[in-house]
Image 1 (tube, rainbow, N blue to C red):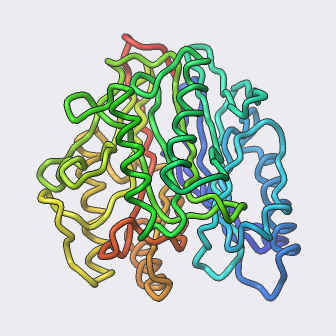
Image 2: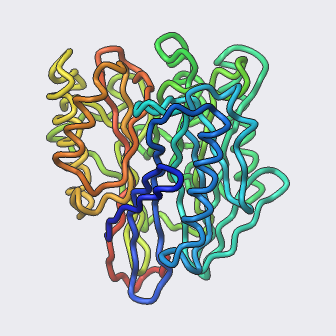
Amino acid sequence: MEYFKIQYNQTASTVQIGLFNSNGNSGECHAMIELSPQLDNTIQQFERLGKTIEELIQSSKLRNYSLVLKRYFLSDAINQAPFIKTTANEAVSVVQQPPLNGTKVSVWLYFIENTEIYHSPDGTVSAKRPGYTHLYNTQLHERIGDVNRQTDAVFGHYTQNLAEQNCSLEANCIRTWIYVQDVDVQYMGMVNYRKYYFMEAGLTPETHYIASTGIEGRYIYPEVLMLMDAYAIPEVKKEQITYLHAPTHLNPTYEYGVTFERGTAVDYGDRRHIFISGTASIDNKGEIVHPMDIDKQTDRTLENIGVLLEEGGMTMQDIAQMIVYLRDTADYEIVKSYIEKYYPNTPSVIVLAPVCRPGWLIEIECIAVKAISNDKFPAF
């Protein structure tokens, strides 16, 4: 993994980049863009961000790369959504999770080299490579009913969408991101209906679940209580996928009533991807470690991630991007100092997003990439 930062003085912004190249095969790039706090308004901040994205796309580092996914972290989604611009056919994700550096917006961008991007009428974005198609569905939501009905509708629509691609939740969905408004109240309703859908789809403790993050987040419509992004691969085979457990540090999630995988590794002929779910300061009995101590919870959370990555044959140096969620804005400076001290090169963003259990002060998710050679599978 190659790490570097680009400072754009004209727009007062910083781009952190994790770039993976694989000996002539398609490269991929994760970029986190943060604006520097200034005394400017919403319009001016989005103008600065837009110019930064344009500069990045046109940079020599990303020649022949296509923008696949763009996720905006907003401080006020209802009012700021009109300022979001798309550049081509990329998948766009919008969630109200305020950046904690004092600005109104940050963004995560994902690029793949030598890739054709298609945006279907149903909203699915397809990144087509010779061996695989990568499917992104973003901003899946329902505007009517309580969180139970909305979760039921979202998973129902997504399952139908997968079926139209000759895919299923059980065989092809690799990762979901679920945002719940008022997570302390609404989370268990989402969990219960997700559990029902998973059982119907053949996802059980005896089979497997899906890497996921379930956390506080709001959409542009105030009546939306549950919002989901998802990633699937039609051509993926069961033998390409490994589920990561880290039993010395973590317990199975179903032991405390939820249904997701701690981490999922996907092997290709030339590389391995690992998707680490939202991870907190927890032990292998499901208990919170270091209650009310943000510094030690941050340390334990990253220790848990490191053990999951080690199980998948990677290290923290293989992380391409990291999203850090905090319950309390007052913890920002402590966590920022920790990340800058121990992971100064890793592209990351810190946002306000309460975790699903009040005692968890921090949650972190990440994506890691490492070169491998496996002639059983086509290259990425």
